[in-house]
Length: 146
Image (cartoon, rainbow, N blue to C red; front, side, top):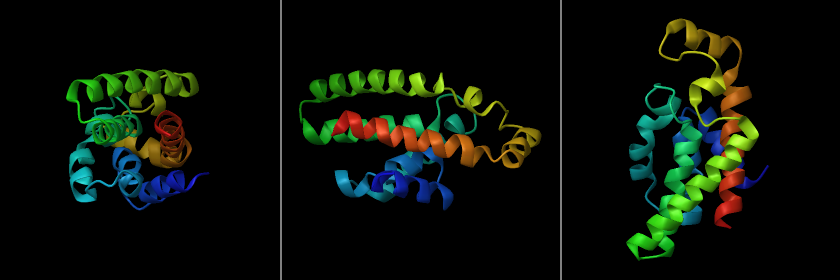
């Protein structure tokens, strides 16, 4: 496990959501404001506010790609085009591992219900699913930006 993966998992275990955990792991490497990043990514956990749409580890990764490309290239259109391309590539790679980028499909429970949240806790899905998604996201990100 890389240092960035370890940092992301540690952040998640300390209470950050999956999106925050991924983005926070890149604060030092990409030199951006951690407080702003935590605020921006706050609503993206649980597939965006527990809507269980796109996995938070995935959306956090998309944010990192945007920061990376915008710091690298001041041309807005070029950085946007590069980011869009990386998002598609990331999505393909994540789906190859997990079959989907959809939080509800990954967790197989409904986080909007007490029963679903209890199922997640009882089955340690944070550990067995979310941490794997975070770790895989960081590995894919590193492959795309290094």
